[in-house]
Image (cartoon, rainbow, N blue to C red; front, side, top):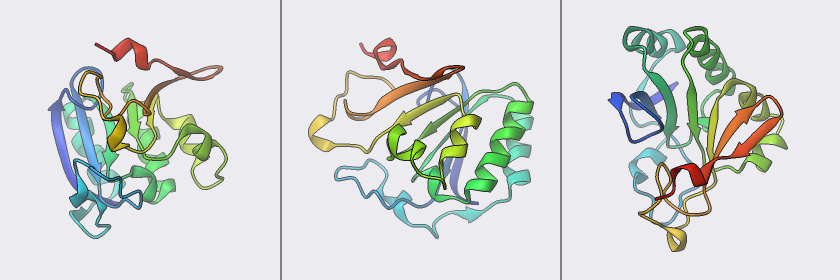
Length: 160
């Protein structure tokens, strides 16, 4: 897996103290992106699932997958990492430029949905940028909680 950075103990990428994994590579190229250096698929360093997991296991904070776009990683490795994280009782937030509908309708990506707890979906849209919302950059992006009956939008829980 190609990793730009791993931030331990951050509070900006989801509820509580988290370990945020910034994966390299993104094809969305959103105008006004705050992290355009993450678009490069060769940036950062290559790390195995076990390498990443050992950092998470050592710190035991909940986890956020962000980037870039984590869905451009090897999806089987991402699912494997998610299962290992869940085995520790930790929760996982995943940020992606894809929408929930796009993921659900794509056989390549849809299995990740069973292995995350919260999905922050949708591309950043500069004209919808809003500094008063939490954990999102633009109003079109949603915070979706995975429940037994599907994903529910909990974005309003984080609006100021």
